Image: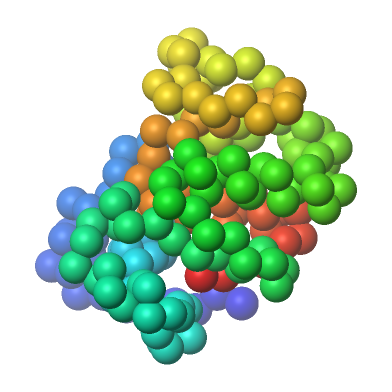
Length: 166
C-alpha cells in the first residue's frame, strides 16, 4: 500500500537535485536510495538494531569498502564487494531453483540504457558492460555501488518472490 507524503517546494527541489538520471524515475526511488545509504552508513539492519559487531566496527568506512550481509528468504549472504554480492546472489538463485525464471526475464533492464544482467555483456544503449561478471550463462553488470546494487537486487528478487533484507 502506498502512502502520500506532502513536501514543501524547497524540499522537493532538493530531492530533485539528488535524483540520478536514468536510474531514479520517481521521488520514491530517490528516497529509497537515500534510506538504503543511511542504513548502510549506520551499519544497522532495516529493523533499526545493529546487525553485528562486525558492521558496527565499520560504520566510518564508505559502503563500497566495507561489504554487506543480506538475507534472502532466511539465508544469510556475506559479501565483501559488489561483484562478490552479485555472484553470491546468482549462486543462491541457481542453487535454489530460480535460474530458469532468471533466464526467462533476461535481459533485465534497470533503465532505458542499462541492464543488470543479460545473455550478452552489452547494454541496450549498445555499450559493453563496464565491468562484467559471468555466472553460468548470464553476464552481470557489476560496476555499481552498494546502494544501487541492493536496490536493483531488491526489485529483481521481488519479481521472483524472494524477500531481500539486510
